[in-house]
Image (tube, rainbow, N blue to C red):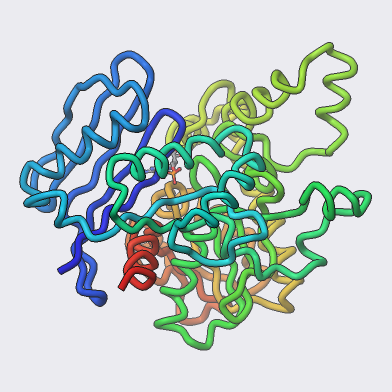
Length: 394
Ligand code: AMP
């Protein structure tokens, strides 16, 4: 069995999972989360297969100290020695137009990663910190990069090119890239395994960040995230689609800087702003059920946004065979799935109320009579990264 470590590095947090695999079966040995990197009160929580969750409060000054601490945790029973670690897979946000699939990280790849990271001003550095730290700690172990944008590189020009002066694309690479690609790929691929006839799929990754993707014959042909991960459907604290002129107008008339408007659009908007300070749909659902007007409006806007994309992508593909719900909201909120599907009755969507009560499992939610199949499929981006890492390093 080969041991593969998967790393998903954020600016102040870092997720990890250690897999054991023979190339067919992938078993999670341990997974965990380091939080508050570079901030007081940092800790690492982790859970070994079949055991209780543990939390270590430990100073984590930077990504290198964090990964060193994680390796120490792995050496407490998950790995006999560091030599047992066979390869490392990293999640990266942006592959620009360079990467349409995962790659082994060599010097040439690293150069392109440095170039594309600036397309993600808020998160780009964080992804790179994880690779740099691992390379310095374990220089002889093969490392693979899996890009959130890669799956969407199949989008045709009519879906990815913005109607701006062409120079903005040709010189500055401003275009729709799309993200959550690993998740959309995973859930649509899982569905195609049991429903090979599903040529036209709409994948709804609804979580604190949300995106919807149109997948035709296994390829992404359009997606609701664009140049950055702030457009598309309303999100926890991100605004989603707004008129492109609004940020400029706010800057011109309210004397705000680009950074302030960026903060407003990404951290102070979305469900949080609409509901009066709640970004978690569990809280908003509760308030909705209590008759809170603001919560009712928030939920109505959310559902309106989601069905608008489903409608648009159905038209783009000339129909839809299956709709998938995944991620935090998609896998857990029977309430929102029901509200969304209710609005899709016009196209023959019918869901089984009992099955829709289930959470976080691969299950068909539609009734046999439903013209469009509806599935809940738990996403597993880490598994895709481990599989790609195995294939590239084997
Ligand atoms: P994610 O970013 O995919 O981890 O999704 C996190 C979000 O999923 C949370 O902010 C909630 O809005 C939502 N969520 C998680 N669990 C539930 C639940 N049991 N019911 C409703 N929404 C949930």
